[in-house]
Length: 196
Length: 196
Image 1 (cartoon, chains in turn green, blue):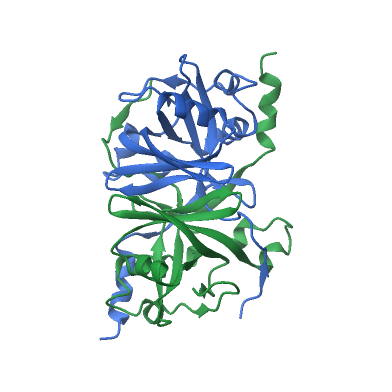
Image 2 (cartoon, chains in turn orange, red):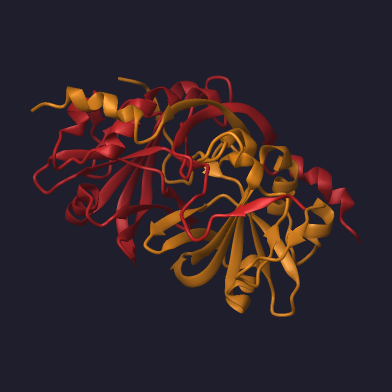
C-alpha cells in the first residue's frame, strides 16, 4: 500500500489550464483576469464554465455585458498571466501594464487576447452561486485557433499552441513535455483483456 | 496580426486534467470512468465539479450513493485511463481489465484509486442540467496525496505527482515538461510597470 498524507478539506487539484478571461464593462472599458478554474462543461450546446470570486471586476463585467472570452495562455506568457491574476482591474490597467493586445471578437462584446493561440467567445447563459464564488457558464459561439498550428497536423499541433499548465495546490506554471498516448486509440489495447 | 482559423462553435479547449472518477452503485459494485471536464469550482466550501453524459453509469451511481472520488492520473497510466474512457462499466469490469486497485475512502462510500497520487473524496451536493450533460458538484471532504511528494518540497513535488495532461480537441495525452514560473510571485515583476 502506497503511503499517503491526508490533507483534509482543501482545494488542491491539478493540472488546470491557464486562461485569460477578457471582459468589458457597460462603458466599453476592457479588463483581463487570469483564471484556472475554467473548462468545458457541455457539448449540447458547447458550453464553457469559469469559476470566480463574486468580488472580481470580471464578474461585474460579465453581469453588465453578458459575454466573456476565454483565452489560452501560451507558456512564454507565464509572467504576464501571473500578473493578471494577482492584481485587480479596479486599481490598475492590466492590459497596458501586461503589454497584451486586445482585439475585437466576432459575435460578442468582450474582446479577445491577440497573443493567445486559442480564443473562445462565450455568451453568458447562467450562473451557479457556490459560497463566495460564482460558476459562470457561457455558450461557446466561436473559437479562433492559430492557423500555423494546422500546418503539419490537421487536428492541431500541441507544440504550436504550447499551453501553459497551472498546478493549483503547488502554485506553479509548467509547460508540456512529451506526448504519452493518443486518446480514443491507445486504450483499445486493453479491450482484448476484457473477460467474456 | 496573427492569422487565426475560425473553428465555429465546438468544444476545443485545453489543457485539462486526466482523472478517474470512482463510484459505487446501491449494491456496492464499483466503477471507474475517465473524466477531463473536472476541476475546482469553489473554496467556500471546497467543491469539485465533474461534467458527464447523463447516460453514464457513473452518473447513475452518483445519483444512487451520493458520493464520488476524483483521482489524478499519473503519466505512466495513460493507456489505462484511455481504456476507462472508451468502454462502459455496463458492458465490462473496468477495474479488473485495467488492473487498477480500489481502496476504501475515509468519509464517503465511493472508493479511491490506489495507484493515483492524489485522491479527492467528494460528497454530492448539487447538479446542473446542461443539455445531455450533468455538471455534478461535490463538496471536498478529504484529500489524500502521495507522501513521497513532500520529501523534498513542503508544498509538493510536481514531478512525483507526474500528472497526465489531456488536450481535448487534439485528443492527446501529454506529460509535464519544465517549470515556467512560480504563481503569486513571478508576476509581481510587472507591478513596477503599473502607471501611477
